[in-house]
Image 1 (tube, helix red, strand yellow):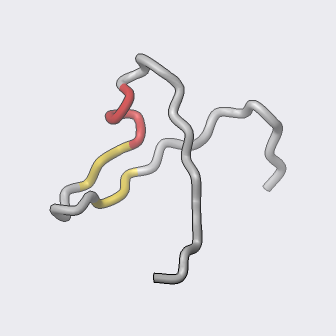
Image 2: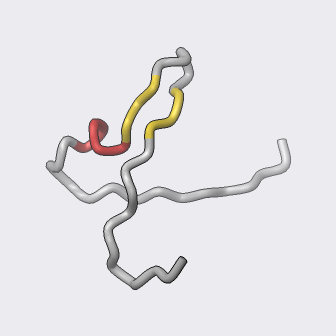
Length: 43
């Protein structure tokens, strides 16, 4: 998969803390940019 800097991130639907699916596009509703950070912690 070849990605370009500044390319649009694909819309994902992930489960929230209640088990309901939440799409990334629904969080911002196009009002502002969304930054997604993946962090692997040791907890």
